[in-house]
Every structure is written in structure tokens, then in C-alpha cells.
Amino acid sequence: MTAPASTPARLQVRGLHKTFTLHLRDGLRLPVLQGVSLDVAAGECVALVGPSGQGKSTLMKCLHGSYGADGGEVLLQRDDGSTLDLCNATPQQVLQVRRREMAYVSQFLRVVPRVPALDVVAERRLHARADLADSAAADAALVEAREAARALLARLELPSGLWDLPPATFSGGEQQRVNIARGFIEPASLLLLDEPTASLDSARRRVVVELIEEAKARGAAVVGIFHDEEVRDAVATRSVNVRHLA
Ligand SMILES: Nc1ncnc2c1ncn2[C@@H]1O[C@H](COP(=O)(O)OP(=O)(O)OP(=O)(O)O)[C@@H](O)[C@H]1O
Ligand SMILES: [Mg+2]
Image (tube, rainbow, N blue to C red; front, side):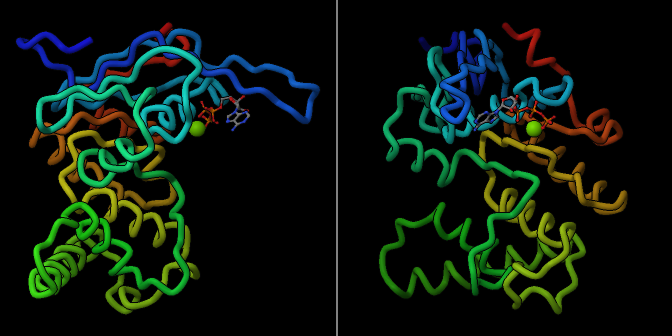
């Protein structure tokens, strides 16, 4: 299935089913997503709302391709105009989409030991532009990626004394700013945001709101979970309850 040419939704979720089987509880089955359908257009930010445990993060992980689905389709319109069903894509196709076209910002940073904060951010851009011709091109790309990472970390007001340190010992809010910088350094066409501002104070939350607005303005489709109502009201073009999507 492809989007009609006149209104090409960047993301089309169709009849998505996800059931968890709890092996430690005699195979108890927990149906979380039961036929979820949702369209997200370029430039739109859809906020997933609803009580705890309804499946917001589960839906987000299915969109990211980290959870397989039991049925349905997650159709992503790719930058080259083709459509990929993330539910039936190969791991290689999912990795390729994640490299450049999709960014996922979770509440917590997955810390890689010994990699300084600056490179945690810069690496994301390098991975997205991995097809570099030779080592001179790779060196130039590293310089440029670090420059972009510095600019973003400065904008998020991460103290510059931390940039060369691995984020393992950073506070929750400091780690979250590294995570946000990593998510926004490349202009992904699909942005998945799971509580991106949960550990931030109001000044830093405003910067994240600006970054999301800029992403929408350049045509990114955004799906987010924002428990902070002020942030949600500022960025969401609409809010949907996961239970009501079926
Ligand atoms: N990997 C998993 N294995 C088993 N059950 C899971 C798994 N992930 C989520 N669940 C269950 O699925 C349901 C939905 O969880 P999910 O994390 O998607 O909720 P949520 O809407 O994001 O909640 P919150 O607002 O608290 O973050 C919960 O009952 C949860 O226990
Ligand atoms: Mg959640």
C-alpha cells in the first residue's frame, strides 16, 4: 500500500497488533496494541496520550522497529520516494532507515563506555554519512560533525567542561541533553520522541521545543510522548489516545 500522491503521509500505521507473552507467568498473553491505525504527515507532530500502561511506548518501539508486530503495517515513506513496511523489513533495511531517516530519542541515554559526550553526538552524523570516499573525506567529516555537535550541545547548555567526558557519570538531565543532541544532529524525516524533556528544567525544555518546531518546519513527521503538558501544547499538532486508534 502506498500513500496517495496528493497527501503523502510520511508514516502510515495500519491495523497494528502487538501482544506480549509472559513466559514467567505460564505464557499469559497481554494484548497491548489491537489494530492501531494512524497517519502522520510531514510537518506534523502527533502526541500519544493516555494513562500509564496503555501502550504508548510499545507503539513507539514498533515504529522504531525495535519491537516486531504480530500483525499490521508500519509504512514509512522514504526520502527516495519508496515505501517501506517496517514490520516486514529486513534488519538491514531497518538499520539503513535508522542511520539517516529516522531518529529516536528516549528518556534515557544508552551510554557507550569511554566515548566522550561530543563523539556520542558527532557519531550519529558520521554514521548517517558513512559512504565517504577516502580517509581525507572521513577526517573532514569528523571535524564537521564535531563542530555541529559542539553547536548543539552549547545550544542545549551542556557545560563545555563535560563535552570531552563519557556521559556515564552525568546527571539525568545532562545525559538527556546528550541524547537530544544525538537525536537532532541529523535532519531525520521521522522523529520518535519518548519523553524527551522528562529530566529537563523549563529553560532547557524551551530549547527542545524550538528544536522540534524547526524539525516540523523542515518537513519532519514527529511522533512524541510528552507528559509535560506545556511542551505537548507547544509542539503537538494533535493528540491521540493509543486506545482510541484501534
Ligand atoms: N517487553 C515487554 N514484555 C512484556 N510486557 C511488556 C513489555 N513492554 C511493555 N509491556 C507491557 O505492555 C503494557 C504497555 O506498556 P507501555 O510501556 O507501552 O505503556 P505506556 O503507555 O508507555 O506507559 P507509561 O505512560 O507508564 O510509560 C504494560 O502493561 C507493560 O507492562
Ligand atoms: Mg511509556
